[in-house]
Length: 346
Ligand SMILES: C[S@@+](CC[C@H](N)C(=O)[O-])C[C@H]1O[C@@H](n2cnc3c(N)ncnc32)[C@H](O)[C@@H]1O
Image (tube, rainbow, N blue to C red; front, side, top):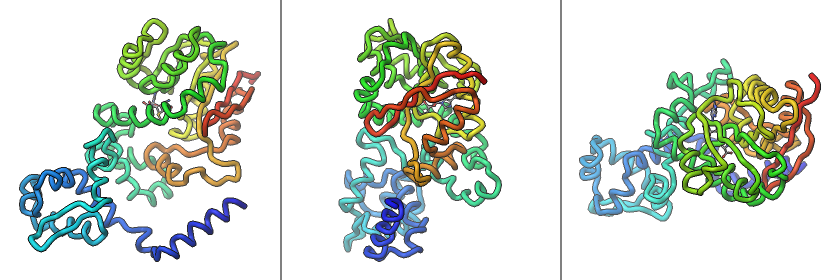
């Protein structure tokens, strides 16, 4: 019921603001903004490079084409232009300074980054519906994850975004479960080690390992946090067998990046490594039980970037059951859920 009300509210907002279907489906403005961000136009305006000629010379672009792009940004209220042909930033235009990396933000809207490239694959959405192929791999001939490995600055930016989301919740996660009782954990796909470092700080008896595509970012985190005695990291893939014998195998924000078959593979590897006593612990924000995506935009991103999906708790439970895991407990941690799984007889 709440779902229908929310939908009606969004529809009413669109009506009130006069947004048309054309505007809702516009590709012109998003691309013009992304081009301006990629070319660092806001930074140049900020230091007094103001006309299309000067900006084009600075950016190696055609002055006429650049001017037409920037004039569109004037039309939509991102830039201003005076009678001398000088461009300026509106309040919203100033956000381009942040989005293109002047502040600590990773440059998500920069077309040269992996995230920027990933958004462009939405132009293949119809293809995805018809063929089920992962748009990112179809477009670039490499997976999102392999591209993050290739482009280390995009990789670091991605880790940072993940780490920020984790830092906001780590206190709640650390106290919501008796992590210390596990003795040792493997944080499977643990990124730069922010979660494991937080758990080790809160549970002095715990030791752990991050397994991710690259060990270096997590090793650096542990060294900086003075945790190298109790934490380590290894490079590897969770699509292959995992190091056995830990008390817990953590999968934090992993399942939604993968299709059902891959999630079964990953959970199956965790189960095998955890046998006979270990636990598998999923930390995630699940889609709501009404069957409506908690975030439909992210759900479609999961689809085109990696062939993944936002799943309800029941959908994850069903995949776990398929590989012989049952839910032992569910705990809330901030707006996320900790799902504890244990091996059952297959
Ligand atoms: C959405 S991030 C989650 C990171 C971290 N667990 C967290 O919650 O902040 C997904 C992680 O999976 C890692 N990853 C992707 N493919 C992998 C693979 N085949 N094997 C191991 N890790 C992988 C990525 O490098 C990334 O760190």
